[in-house]
Amino acid sequence: MSASSRRVLAATATSALLLCLTTACGSSGSDTSSGGTVTLRYAIWDAVQEPALQKSVAVFEKQHPKIKVKIELNAWAQYWSKLQTQMAGRTAPDVFWDHVAYFPQFSQQNVLADLTPYIKADKLDTSIYDPKLLTGWQQDGKQYGLPKDWDTIAQVYNKTMLEKAGLTQDELGGLSWNTTDGGSFVKALQKLTVDDNGKHPNEPGFDSKHVKQYGLALGSANGQTDWWDAAVQNGCKLQDKAWGKWTINQPSCVKAIQFVQDLRLKYHVAVPASVTNTPNGASLPQVMARKQAAVVWDGSWDLNAYQSSMKGNFGVAELPSGPAGKGTVYNGLSNALYAGSKHPKEAWELVKWLGSQESQKIIVSQGSVWPGIPTLNKDYVAVWQKRGVDVSAFSKEAEGTTVGYPLTTSSATYNVKVQDAFNQVWLGQQSPKAAADSVNEESNAAIK
Image (cartoon, rainbow, N blue to C red):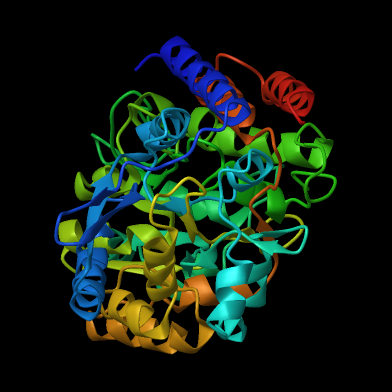
């Protein structure tokens, strides 16, 4: 889908949703059979997580014989525009994954059910959740979702390639970068980058047009798995405050963006943007499966994808530190209940189940995602230890300096603008400052 098509689709969906909201749109498309069985629709976007969810839903259906659940999978690139169109057409799923990027917009548009009355009626103990995750889904004293999981970003590496370059996991996680010469991080990536003739970028005769293996691959539609992390490591703040204005054009942010561009265009240690630019480029797990890069910055949600393609030949290290130290993005999803569901009581039962220890234990047992319930974190680590992978780098980063996903009502605008502008930055077609200025200005203008 072209960038212009995405803009049109997003604008159409938003307009349709607003029309719906002003004309009392309502019920979901869930069904009730003649036997009294309710079929709930549950929307998600990640195919990697679907098998674990199917196992959880199977137990739920066994415990609730009058409720069936139909999982609807739509890729991230289509998920949000389709969801908003469904809301406008009164056919939204009863329960769906919600993301912090869209939570402010949805809460403002009253399409999320307030879970507070259900929580009180069932005396649900919400103290089991990470407070940062739970409060992230609250506004004006109302609870608009129960924590599903959490994630940070770390370095996923190819064990064989790292060993061949003479590097260890601890060394990879202990590297640092700067905006002067790239620091030890760039030096390590130079070791990991090899052209067709076996030369490295810091050697005479290196051919940047014919690279067999790059040290690093980066890819992100919004910045979460690439420049946001570098920005935090350079002391940049993405917003002046939660629900406030974007501040991505401040000097510390622009320098971080420049560094990420330099990894590709100056140092030649990162896979070209023509390969990884979203939404049509190769995903990070695909790049690693093709052995195009030795290291990627990626979220914990993709671990099962690496396990499937690399058969255990991968490890996880902390991100490097920048001029301001360590830092990463900390985020989490929720399961939300559509305000227009025809079966809110049954939908609440599903939301409650998905947020329960019993369900999250099932998800953890599959190594799917870190749980929203902190007491289960050790179980997640143990699952991956049995597979030969130490995933503790993600939790160490969560305990350090983190930045939450920006809370703003202009995420829809930001997501369109940032992808278009930054794809050009990574290709060398626009300067980091110009892109940051334009995205900052247009995103702030869209705040409601």
